[in-house]
Image 1 (tube, rainbow, N blue to C red):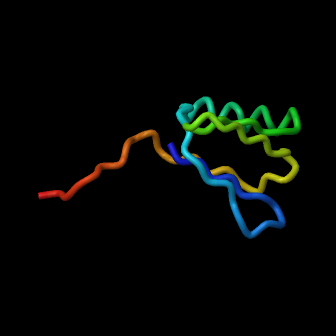
Image 2 (cartoon, rainbow, N blue to C red):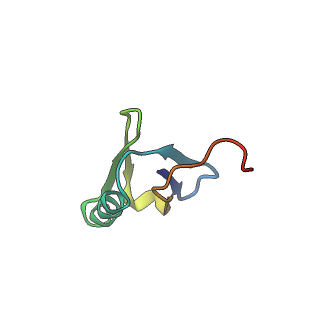
Length: 72
């Protein structure tokens, strides 16, 4: 699933694919608002840690896979 994290005062965003479910990512974001930092792992095993005070938005994509090829 695609995840995009907007950072305050930055023109760039953090964008990556994650193997986590929508519910897991949503729970991580909500708990980050209380704990002070957001921690999410991507599909390649990298870990992103973002201070919650700097998060402008979190966009969580759908869990469905993209179709590849031509439609007849």
